[in-house]
Image 1 (spheres, helix red, strand yellow):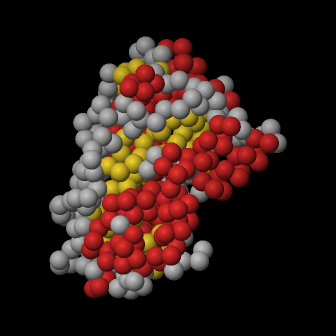
Image 2 (image 1 turned 45 degrees about the vertical axis):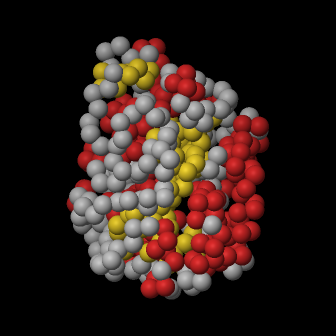
Length: 380
């Protein structure tokens, strides 16, 4: 479980009141919103050597030919991952490579519509796409959006069973855990999943609808298989507030509109980092996890900068920075890295790490959605 170590340092001068959280996070997302400084403070500096290609912390990320060809290039990234995370990643990538990322961020379902529309019209703008739903990744592969590309780490990724496919890969894992507003719950703080069903939190619990997909399917399956269907029913009896996105849930928790929630760890961690009065909880029974799937397009194959970004993402430096943001690295040959030097999430090879695989998604997602809807009386 998490141990209480006080507030995270407020990076980039982001000391804010909970009521100002939305304004603060919006400002952080704007150009020059402190992401460069925040990225530097979030994770240790790497040792970068460009004398013969790109070598970071002793790993060859790009050989000399690729590195030279990438100079001055821009990576066009389409992503269903949160904007805060992608902005930080872009800042870190530029610090280590000098290369820029042009981000298009949409929820995965909307992103799929745009990508397939652009692909059909022969005007696909993305070099690389990241999606949170395995069905979308498979569709992108079948429709020719994703094309084969091998990073320098592919053999290692296969050995570690990280989820490497023919045309796309799992770059890191999303995690759902728990959190609470510690300006409201100052004593007898929750530590276990079962605390979500404590009657004292009736009317104060927040959840995100399972129909949001991806990571929420993983959470529902984890709760059903580990805690039982009755656990969902007891949450439904709490008169919870049901949100249609993780970001709106985290905002409501920060403002005190709810006091406790099951939540996306990375989204909530970003809010805490920005100054929200949140405390995250990693229960003893573990966390749910799902893949963040990433693939190269034909445009990317023709863009050396995009190839450098794909390689960097799977390097120890890229994986370590993802861990520092509250994701779990796909690679398992790394020492554990705490999010914000505070929270230690279970690693991908830990028994506390409950991965919802692509095969389980196909088998259980529809069933789990029906169970969840009945438990919460949800008609959406």
